[in-house]
Image (tube, rainbow, N blue to C red; front, side):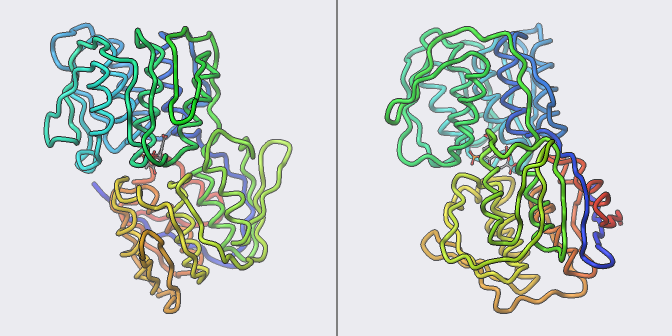
Length: 419
Ligand SMILES: O=C(O)C1=C[C@@H](OP(=O)(O)O)[C@@H](O)[C@H](O)C1
Ligand SMILES: C=C(OP(=O)(O)O)C(=O)O
């Protein structure tokens, strides 16, 4: 049952809190696939509590315990994009027959580029529903037909990560040629770094990444806290009159591209400093931003930054938002609809998106819809510092990446009441 929550912040807008964030879901989901491919040689510490990680972990256990290779094992990833993409590649190479499915929205999120690349390599993948989209039927025969495949780089980096993780288990290895622009590149770098930590070397020459057949190392991978989750605390600090927020264990230099939030939030008034055991955010004064912010490398920060800037009345412009339309929801449309409730427009002109905050006004009471998208809930919740009564629809959506989000808000002085 979907339930709403009323979120409010009473008293002066001063925050002094220490928040321990869960592990990165991106690092966790790579670590799980790498551990499964290594047959137990690679082990993982500090796995995320994110539902997307719990789901993937459960499916991998189910697959490893499956002894009936002829009956299709039905696996359902729900809303987890990384699980869908990584499993499409992983299940193609393991023994067994699978029906890989997901939520209603997952069936609208394209998978053709990955499925075609795997088919060219020799995987037995077929569409079980609409062409180009999940669900997929994956059969057990994988006879490698070629070592080299091309893939378009501007739709989702997850396709490339999925292929690169299985590369070393393929008899001929893999040469992955990236066509056109590459979106979300830090996620690809994260995949290659984690593979390297697990003993798998690569060569990146011009637009091609080569991985040979190699053995995994006996190693423990430690997942860092989630930088995407930290972004909501940056937004809270930016909207507070005074804030000191400690985030233990976060490293300034991270595998996660979303650590870019540190620099992006400086003009919005948030300073980051290193502490003996992590980082600390402090609110200060905002400065002018004249340049257009390109978020191609960190699409998961887009909602946080756009909503925070809108609430501060900053008419900022953004590029690199194209992939937002194929995520948990069409995030552009969702932002436009919800920002309209505070009088702000997000206008598009030739792939440049600009906030128009001329009519910004905070009503006494507003309900923000979340469209099955955890990041809509978490990006809009900080507005409860500026609006007397904020309702977040279907507030449990946060479970996808940050299940303790509401508990953590309460720790910082917010009240969260299910209605
Ligand atoms: O590889 C990953 O862990 C992710 C890559 C990004 O997706 P795209 O590559 O589709 O932009 C990001 O939005 C997603 O939340 C996680
Ligand atoms: C886009 C996201 O996740 P995924 O693509 O893995 O579903 C996200 O967490 O914002």
